[in-house]
Image 1 (cartoon, rainbow, N blue to C red):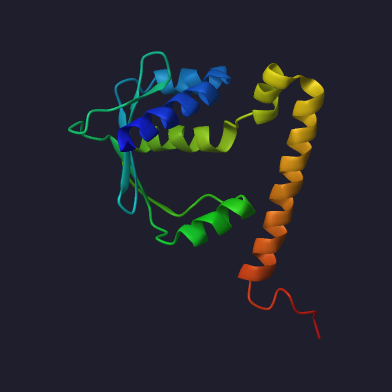
Image 2 (cartoon, rainbow, N blue to C red):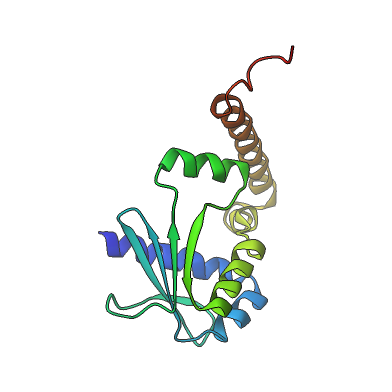
Amino acid sequence: MVQEVQRRMVLLLNHVLMQEPEATARLARQKGSVVLVQWRGFALRLLATPAGLLDLADLQAKPALTLSVTQESPFALLESALRGDKPEVRIEGDVQLAAEVNWLVDHVRWDLEEDLSRLIGDGPAHTIGQAARSMVQALRQFAGTVLVPGADRAPP
């Protein structure tokens, strides 16, 4: 089951990468490199392919780069994600590959609204996109109020 979830994650990542030619060009330069992403008991080994996409790497493959998410709490990770922050990560290995991964994280975004418009049309996709953005904004405000001590009190 874990491997199937990982395969689905790789498919989604590749779908997003294919929408950005610069991303695939950068990954193609790193072909054969393995990145190990770890958080708690979860580990995902990704292999950069010659096409500039990702594949699951063999479990025995030695990673050129290891990214270990240091935040243990899933709630703290959710909070930082809602703020739009990157999680705290310990980086070990190839500096150039780390720079490319950082560029991908900073510049590649999934245009969910565009994908939805192909399925259900522009109007409904735009409406769903607006609703999703409003919900995320409300969650960010809620997280800021609840998770920041004293944020719900008026200044003296």
